[in-house]
Length: 155
Image (cartoon, rainbow, N blue to C red; front, top):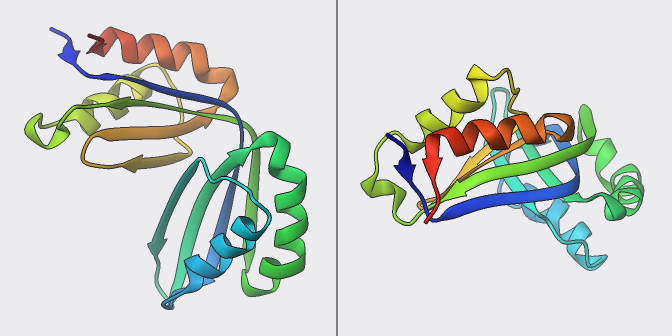
């Protein structure tokens, strides 16, 4: 039996950045995002979480056309505050959306299981009350989409 969902999120032509060891304090995420906002760079995906030793990790995706500008901004403003910055080109976001996932238990488990069973590595994972999205290598897009369509039913 397939699980009914509202639709598929499918964003391609993205570059992912992971900034690790960002200072875990109020305003750190805003500092990075404000630098990008000043240059009119749209964030397609973002997640941030605290780690040990008062550090945090922020992962975000931008359209690949904006990547050279992001590289410049990071080099000029962020690199000195971070022990490591990871850049992954050629990624995409695949996800499923609601409605009302809180009323449908295990959506995240089915989503991750579908990708895992076909060998798709999740580079980033984000969810809300109505959406779960994964960053994956673009070369795994078609395989991942097929796996999700085997589990989830569109309206």
